[in-house]
Image (cartoon, rainbow, N blue to C red; front, side, top):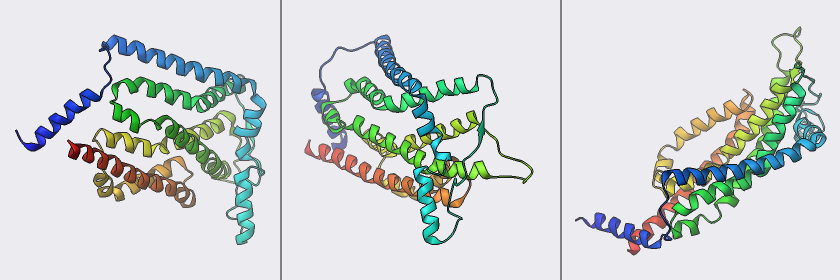
Length: 288
């Protein structure tokens, strides 16, 4: 038997000893356990959704509909930037975007949809915690120790991504798409449902994109990703991130660059995280 095979066998034995002895669960028992985690997660989302439904004025007037107004924070910052550089080209949303609802139940159904999405965002830390509770019994003691802050960092990164999308990408998208005209004879009267769909999809997509370091950690932990692989395909990844930026932002180069920079930063952080994880795994093998 080769030295490498012997080392892997010893590692397996060691990890088996580290694992907390628990009774083996059948497939149906795993499904039952997963079902209850999902039920609790949905319950938490519904509780926050009900709260968001009740706080209708705040959710819509102060959050959802705010980015289209000149007094929104991002719009004011771009206006100040325009005054500093002496051009109006960078000023966005200086005129409030007009909207309409063309369905009889449009505003009510939109209210329900926004409440559910707001409930999910607010309950996301608990949802991530429930997901962690489901996979935790399958981990070894060292893996549990190293991943002890996974829920915290996942929640923080997701919420930061949502805020990034809401405060930067959403106002830029509203300005570009809401003011774009194929002819001066055609007036933009934006449907409320279309506006809500853009705001929520952009914010949630940004939240998921910001989880890149978390994906790097777990993929490196299971051996599916290495820092060498990420470095080798760095240029390819940058092209993909640029394309992703083009998808979730208006089709102008300024917005794409603004979004691409954080993605590149997160990718480089992912390389560092992958390097640390791989080094720890190699050190554990050397100690055997």
